Length: 305
Ligand SMILES: Cc1cc2nc3c(=O)[nH]c(=O)nc-3n(C[C@H](O)[C@H](O)[C@H](O)COP(=O)(O)O)c2cc1C
Image (cartoon, rainbow, N blue to C red):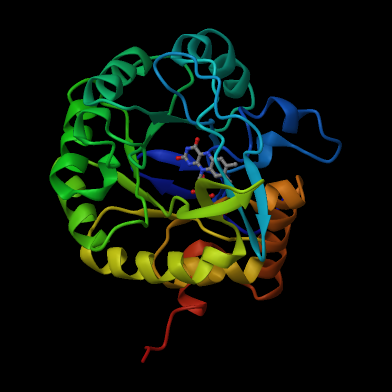
């Protein structure tokens, strides 16, 4: 038995440790479950791939592009749609006994509301993560998450349909992220997750291809935005953006994250989360830190300039 208590509770979601996959970087856990050395029962939570109301095929290849210290993806939200999630994928994810978070994407307010309605009270779902980085078809294709009022409207649409904890996933591609965080907190968001990918392009066979940049390259951007939001809202933050080692997790905690998600690093090392959970536990044991609060106290920032 470990003498370290890594548990954390966020908006009623009880996690045995603060480490979870970032949406879209872990499938719906099916492939990862088969890996030797993987034990999904050890994760803080499972997080689904982005789910839409109807099935989506996603973009044409190429849709992953390696960059220095990161990658650009333009997967285009390939997924089987919410009904298959409910009938097949959620029961699969729920068998591991850790909370299951369903990541929801839409192109209209009504898509988000309808999905929340269908996912409400589905056995095994602990929370919804609302991805507001998607283009708003009724709003000139500008992402929902780029305007405080529009972002708040999405949250209200979802809040009206479910009492599940709502994790709102913020896009970094905005001028003033604090106003967006405050707007969604005011209408009932329970948790913020951040950051989604940064807008980027790559050139392929003479064509410009738009996508989202992730991986270690974006960590400084994530730390900056999380530190701003953490000072402006009361709700907890799940931090992500380039985490690949224990020191990264400490850095995210020190700017105000309560838990962390690992995305791109899973592509390089599919067992990275197992390693980070073990390393976190060992670090706390070695330094005689009995729980996460003691760890956070130890790594507290001493100011800035
Ligand atoms: C291939 C890929 C697919 C992603 N799909 C989703 C998604 O479906 N929904 C979502 O909210 N975020 C999605 N993201 C964003 C990640 O969850 C995460 O916010 C971002 O990649 C930053 O973390 P990282 O640098 O650790 O990857 C995706 C990222 C990647 C690389």
